[in-house]
Amino acid sequence: MTVAEVVVIGLGGFIGAIVRFFISARMNKEEGVPLGTMTANLTGALLIGFLIGLDLPTLWTVFLVSGILGSLTTFSTLMKELLQLWGSGRRKESLLYSLLTFVLGVILAFAGYVIGQLC
Image (cartoon, rainbow, N blue to C red; front, side, top):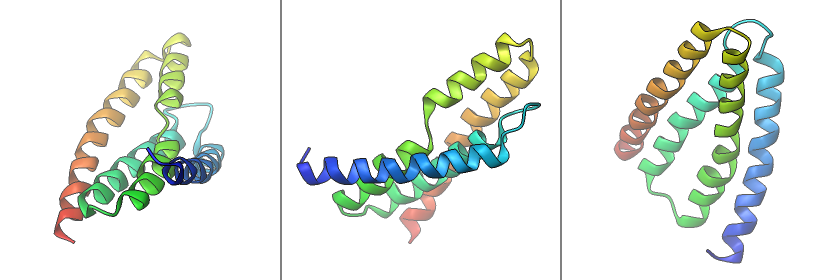
């Protein structure tokens, strides 16, 4: 990994983290599935697949995919929210959130990849 790649990943990560914060602050509610996090993760999965499918130059790929979208689609936030739902006795919501995120995430990433390949 080059110094330039490290710098653009850091810049992209900064952008993605801020976008995630605003999406979560706006959409996550006390009740139900954390829609903000799920929206960020599923949108990110689609865009990651699409960008990988485009086969961009390395510096653009690490900035957009590893930086912005890597920060936007934080696995740790998903795990924290799943554990909080489960721990508060909201097991059905926890299972629904998990199923929707993982199944739709894989489907959207693949769909994005196919679309990117066609472009």
